[in-house]
Length: 256
Image 1 (cartoon, rainbow, N blue to C red):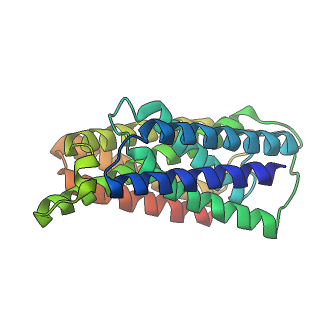
Image 2 (image 1 turned 180 degrees about the vertical axis):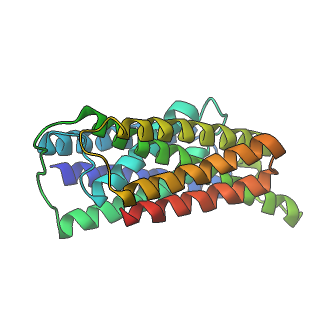
């Protein structure tokens, strides 16, 4: 049943993205609420999947690569629903849906080919659960920052073309995107810091490779935050760094 929940969630996000693209192409923007509704529906099925897997493992369902991808996707969706309106970025959800669709499609294929099954721990370590959950929530914030960066670069390209299309008039102002990237990076750094601190209290300390990978991701994002704080990065530079840093974070995560 868990795989059915995941497939339904993935199809909903695909449908939401297709609906938004059609609305942008036709110039009809009355589907905003429907897209939020689809995002909520997809989130419900994500939660059902994670609950089923959590009951299976008797712990936070992040025991394999497929579950990690779903958890990151869940983080992206829930952070968008929680922060999108505050950042005045209604289209952030539209741009995040393809990434969620790709992540969850990979997860579905992986689970269908080789589902490792139940992996209950000998003893439940709450610090380990906090470390993993906070770290992956941080990835959700970093993912949204990268998506906002993509939106900013598209907006910049549209401006320079001198012939902006319908998408240009639908995108939020650059200031909103710039502010969103800064705040999402701060939120991500905060969550990842909590995750790293939690690791010091775990019953079994992570391997040296785990520390190196997690520390490298933290250092990259902290460097972006500090440089932006001290020197004030231009929106285009921050957009490129947000995208590159998230790509690096995903590659680093795949090493673990």
